[in-house]
Length: 115
Image (cartoon, rainbow, N blue to C red; front, side, top):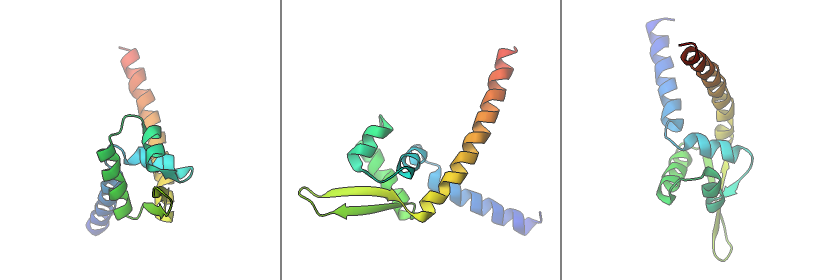
């Protein structure tokens, strides 16, 4: 890999990490992968996330076109969140990260047990 290719690679990886690098991004993408959810439903599914944190991460993911926000004109107004096509593409990346983490987590645990 030459210097130019290496620089492009670093920029691309940094961009991907900027989108999913926050504490809650992985969880939001994972839950929305199985279907759209309303704000409070997503909040319950994520556990101990604050309203502010969930609002911030949803805005962040919407800004990066990972999440779609749909306002449903009911009384009171409902909002549903779903993954865009771009957001669905993150699934394969997240699965690869999981495999890598499981592999090295297992290796780390084995190292600790053998001491």
